[in-house]
Structure formats: C-alpha cells, structure tokens
Length: 239
Image (cartoon, rainbow, N blue to C red; front, side, top):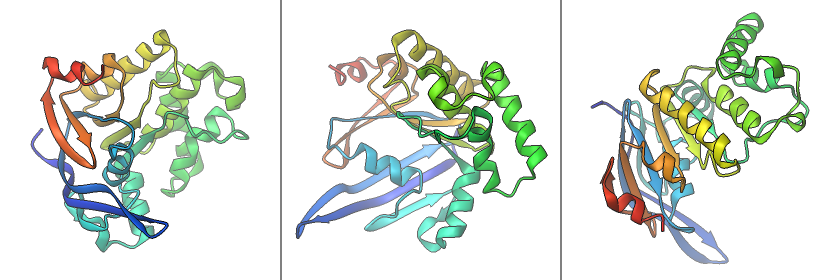
C-alpha cells in the first residue's frame, strides 16, 4: 500500500431538483491506496452511490477534483476518460447488469472490445477467467438460464477481463442467499490478497465488512467516521 489509486479532494456534488439544490456530497476527501480493501457504509441518502460514482470516475464533481492514478479526470475528454476507466477499474453491480441476449462468454468478452483487443485474445482471456470462477460449463448460457450466484460470477469475470487495478462493487452480495454470498466474499478476498487488486465496496454484509482493511461511514455526503479492520464500532453501524 501507500500509492493512491484514486484521490478525491474537497469533492462536492450538487443536483438541482425543481429549483432546489441538493448537495449529495459535501467536501468529500478520500484516498484509496493501492492494494487496499475499502468498505463504504451509510444509510440511504448518505451519498454512498454518488461517492462510488466519483471513485469510479463515472461522474465529475460540481466542485473539487478527482484524480485517477494521478490524473485529474476533469482534464480528460469523455472518450479518453472511458479508455482510462476501462483499463483501471472493473465494476460489479448488485443487479449484475448483464445483457440478457448475450451468452456468458459474450457478456464477459464485451469490455475488451472497447479496449480494441482482437477477438481470439478476448475469447481466450474470457474463457480463462470464467474457468477460474467455475463457470466453464455455462459459457453458452444466457443470463436467464443462470442462478443468481452464477450471474454474479459472470459479473465478476466481466470486471476482471481488462486486468484492472481496482474493483468497485456495489452491494455484491445483496441479491444472493447466504451460502452464495459467502462464495462471493471468498472470491473478493482472494482477488485482494492473492491478485493484489484494490477493492472498494458498498455493503451492509457483515462478512464483507469484517475483511475490509478500512471502513468509511458516510452521513449527509461527508465521511463522519473511519474504522480500521476489527474495530467493534464497524459492526455497530450495521445495526
């Protein structure tokens, strides 16, 4: 650890709704270090989703700066930002966000197309990662023919194919039963510890919270508490 993969400096995000200004983020300062497993907690409306959008360079701040690998994203064109984001960050969503008409293999190959990888390479990488995640028998299945756990494995594989430095996961166990959720927890743990991936999650899953190196607790668009791994107050915030 020690090198910031993502840094948010005095980040504000303001939305105008029916002429009313809503500050979703209020001067958020956050560094995500290389190799860190960071958890973001907070109640509904605390700014978690907006913070994740900023960390993932999916949105730009109303005020303040976001640096991805030392580059201020506001200085980039949308196409350059998309290329940088595609190389540096993999996304895992609670609702999986798989394309229903594409097979497992096609869904996982898709992000590599936007990085201009040739077809044979896309196919090889996708098959290798899906095999590692136990999905080799399901390569030709569309999402509707997969269980929730299988769909999440496909989503994880899709996040990994461009070999990103950082994985962002939004409630990755939220739609899964406890057994399948534990399998996903183990996958994320291995990606962090064995593959040295930086991982940032939004979660209320206690088993995921326990393996985070650090927890940031948001309220009204600000970090009001930070906890290190194992501190009892982490779990108190879930109840």
